[in-house]
Image 1 (spheres, rainbow, N blue to C red):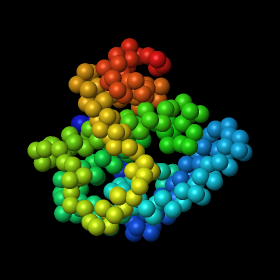
Image 2 (image 1 turned 180 degrees about the vertical axis):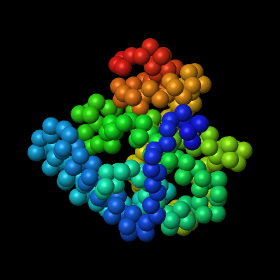
Image 3 (image 1 turned 90 degrees about the horizontal axis):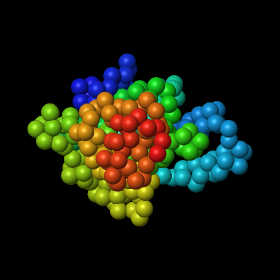
Amino acid sequence: MKEITDLPLPEEVRFRLLTPKAWREETRKSHHRTLARDIADLELTSREIDAVRAGLRIMGFVPVLVWPLVLGSTLVAADGRRETIIAPRALHHGGLLVDEPALHQVVAHELVHQVQADARSGAVWTTFFPQKRGITGRGASTVLEGHADWADHQVTTRLFGAPADHRQSPKSWRYRTHNALPGIRRLGPSRAAYEQGSRLIARTVAAGGTDLVNQVWKDAAFLPTEEEIADPDAWVRRIERGNLGV
């Protein structure tokens, strides 16, 4: 991973295996920790805080719907450290327990998210108020998931001779049922964030190597705009010029 991303590994890499119930509860707690951090860091009005709290109450059912579909989730734990939580039952429903390359892909993908967080040196990209933190929500999602997607393909190609694709793993009836729920995929990063993001990162690495991509972890102003996501060369040119804005 260090060779592929040219980023240092965290001093501690932490993966926790949880029951589905514990995974759902930890996911809910993580959302509330995100809000608490926003309140501590940002100047928010009571109306803004109340709106997010109301949204969290309304969306409290979401972990119940998505847990069989989420193969891994990297977040900030209660002790303030970054960790990846995995429900092995979700790995079963996603077909990864009978697909070794796909299992390695998921572990690599979530490890990249831990590496990314360490590279940001404390900068917060997980927030209910991205504009107040100076980041674009789609730009952050595209870079985070695209970079992890690109890297996990590199890892599995080295290990197995070809990039793994967990989407092709045999899915259980429960996975297929949850995946067919209307709008379910809008509750997390879009597939476009992975696919467009992976192309964006691959093009940038081809143009200037990992050093060019890794500028984004130093300053969120380098996050791509909507136009740059569609035109990776434009993003490459801006990073090469060292322009933080467009």
